[in-house]
Length: 159
Length: 159
Image (cartoon, rainbow over all chains, first blue to last red):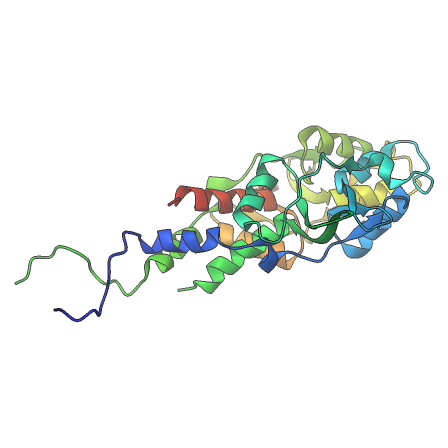
């Protein structure tokens, strides 16, 4: 018999194998830390947190630290141009609430999160963990994360 | 002599070839339409345009339609929480001005734009064309564009 060395044809090209590899990238390897605000906090406090942490989306949590909503820069800008006292307006009034929030879990695939960001026209998703009290926020995935994965992918396979 | 058929070893693997292909993606194939506002417009008008067009960054132009600045949602949010009359405040007061703006041109590579977005922590770049009067804005590239390229890449090479 011929020795089993050299190339074997697996029926897949190298670029298919690379794509297959990328399709297996999971949320847990790439997500950022969560940035959360209590739902009783004011819109003014939420805006301050957004600037301090330099993020585009905040997760809003209840007294059990469970996810109840999200606010984006767009939501905060909309509130800021309304003639309201932002330090007297609780953030839960203007947030997008559960169950109208798209979330992901650490075992989800990056490619599926990227598709959701595009289809739902949002900038980021909270990464959550199921607990008896509700969803605990453990991270976030944004278009920035996806852009970083894209750059890393090309740079790691540099010629 | 043996016939020249079958596989030839080019010294590159399939995944290197795919990466090489992605590295050649150019701005001109992927950029979106430009969203511009005159520098004499008010901050209030800029915010309205941002909501109407649903974009994160606006290019600001002079009377010759040439780029003089950019404003982000963050800039507009900062202005909105200051105690100012937004309809009396011209957008050129709060914008980031030339030459402190990162731009790209249609023949630039997508991967280089993606690196700039990450390194400079910005959401998007204006795509410009050089003219005798200055830089004409012909499009924009954002983290949304990069996320779409990423999704397309995986979907087109589907197993």
